[in-house]
Length: 333
Image 1 (spheres, rainbow, N blue to C red):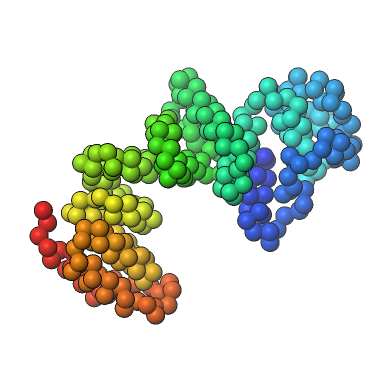
Image 2: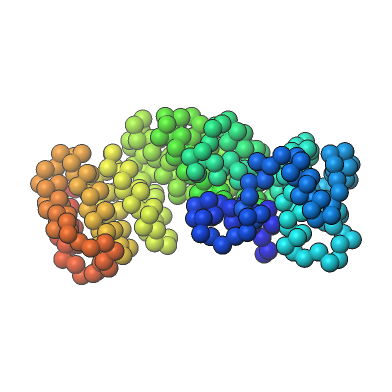
């Protein structure tokens, strides 16, 4: 499927902001939101498109989207190449965004969502309410499409294709940040509102378990148990295992923690991964005040002080079995 032009240039700009060595022409990564109206209309004149506010609004009235408007304005320009077409399009898109905000088509909505998410990811968000409004708008668009008969995941995927950001990853990170900032009620709203739309619900189930740890540890551990079963039956996901393990340090049942460690050991690739797992185990047994286990695992970890990074983990590494022996030494209760 061909990427929608606005998505393509948003993605290019996002990558360029992270790494300025990314190959791109200035017009491809420019912040069009920072340009004045004189600049925007002047850019159009450079491409022999002569419009002012009044004529732009008149044309917009007869169009469904900035894409439709651009194609109409350039319909008689047979000699126009893709590069010049896109230069005109980016200007027309920005003018549409500013001058006809009441005519909110899907590409403009997704562009605003991308803008807010990108500010959030870069730590440059100055207006938290603007992001909340964009997220609320996303849920509204999704709900309306499902109410009209669409399948939740298909609807979500169709919207995601018009966004440069990974929406599912963003929603998880955003809900996680709300929890970290003690905004549990809003985090719960996000999880409830988007749960049926995401393809990998394990991350949201993990957040549910996080919210239950302090109020209902039994229910939290029930969710931990369900997640471990899902992990064992699905594709290897080391990042998810380690993140779940880190949080189980705060209150996970020992038999569940050991089951998760045993499962995760099969998927470790480097000595660094193994050290991370060992460190989590040290923290877990320290919380339980199991001094012998804590000290024994710390002793294993200490052998890696001078270990070079990214060394491949030997599946027959004796320290793996040593860790398991330490964890199983005490009878599970």
